[in-house]
Structures are given as structure tokens and as C-alpha cells.
Length: 322
Image (cartoon, rainbow, N blue to C red; front, side, top):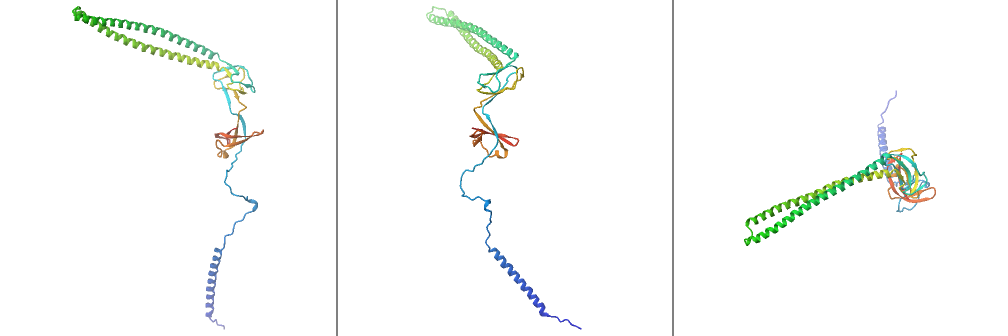
């Protein structure tokens, strides 16, 4: 029969080994941490083909913005009808060179011509009324001036009479009653003279006021007559500027309403470029910036003259003046 014998030194040795392992582990971790912290950071590396090597310099950074466009005349005159009318004659066709006074179309409108005749009659009637009133008022004014002059003359004579009677009365050659009578007549004539003066002044004021009223009527009639003249004149459609007739979108016999575009004239020798720039790039463009336009027949330099604030189909229209 066997018997287990307890070995006390085995437990002690095992505890000692555990303590030793723990100390070794703590020392190892400490040394490893210290070693890692003392290492220098390694530099990053990139491929030589993926970088550009050069000298840093200060200068202008060029931002290029490109876009398609068309060359259009800077000056285009859209001719519209100012009155209702019917096309009577079409004298010029698109493509011909025109001068400002060249007639493109002839329109007719009997009503407009009749209105012009009526306006002329109104002017003549207003002028006649003004002349009649002027003659009448001038006659009345002359009559009142004559009345005033007569009263003034009588008054002056009476004053002389009063002065003479006063001198004679001092010597007793004129009765007192005669002197008083002459003085009363002088006072009456003085009051009448004042009344005639006020009447003359009021008549002069009325004269100017009534004439001003008729002059205003005449001016209104003349303005209407001028308007009718312009309307009749607009029935003859002229180019207005020297250039090339580009478009006449109406035919003989066609009826046109006021505001209808009936012709277009442009100066082809003075052009500008209208470029369509993507909205995302348009923010980098400012008025005055230099621009280069490739016309397919050569390169022309210019500058940005206008930027359309509206966005159409994702693009912004930019004008370049060359």
C-alpha cells in the first residue's frame, strides 16, 4: 500500500518561478516601450514618376475658361411697326447693303391718314380762334386805354382849374362856391381815374390769361398733329442705320400690328463674340478680363464686356468685345 508524501519545497519553487516570469515580462515590456519611443520616424516615400520637381516661384496663376460661341454684330436694329397697317410694297430683300434713309417697306392705313387730316384741321381751327381772340382783346384793351386817357385828361384839367381858382380866390376874384365846386370835380375825377386804372390792369391780366388758354389748346393740337405725322411717316419703313438688311419676315399684303418685328438691320463689320460658358466655370469670369477668340480663320484678342446673369441650359452667355 502506497502513501503520498507532501513536498513543501515544490510549491515554493513554483511560486518563485511565477514571480520571476512576471518580473521578466514587466522588464521586457518596459524595454520594448522605451526602444520604440526612441526610434526616429521613418520618412514617407512616393514614386518619382508621380511628382513634379521644380523651384517655387511667385507669379500670376492663369485660370483658363473655355466655351463655344458665335460671332454676332454689336449693333443690330430691330425695326418694329408703330402703327397698324398692311404691307403695300416690299422694296428690299435680305442680304443687300442699306443706308439709313433707304426704304425697306411701304405700309398703308387709311385711318391713320384720316386722323392726320383731322389733326391738321384742329391746328388750323385753334390758330384761327387764337387770332380772333387776340384781335377782340386788343380792341377792348385799346378802348379801355382810351377811356383811361380821357379821364386822366379831364382830371389834369380839373387840377389846373382848382389851382387857378385857389389863386384867384386869394384876391377875391372867384367866389368860394366856385372853388369848392372845382375841388369836388377833381376828387370825383381822381376816384374815376383810379377805377379806370384798375379796370385797365384787370383787362390786361384777363387778356394774357385768355390768350394763354388758347395757346395751350393750340399747343395740344400741334402735338397731336405731330404724333399723326410720325404715325403716317412710320408707314414708310426705313433702315435707320447703315449696314446689311438681314431679315424681312413679312410679305406683301400681310397685316401687321403695332410692335410687330418687320425687319432687322445689322453692321457686320463690327462684331462681338457671344460665348456659352458652363455655369460651374462662369464664377471665375469678371468683366474686363482678357480673352482670346478662335474664329477658325485666326485668333483675335479681346476682353469680357458683359456677363449674362441668367443661366440657360447650364450655361452662361458671356460677351467678348474684340
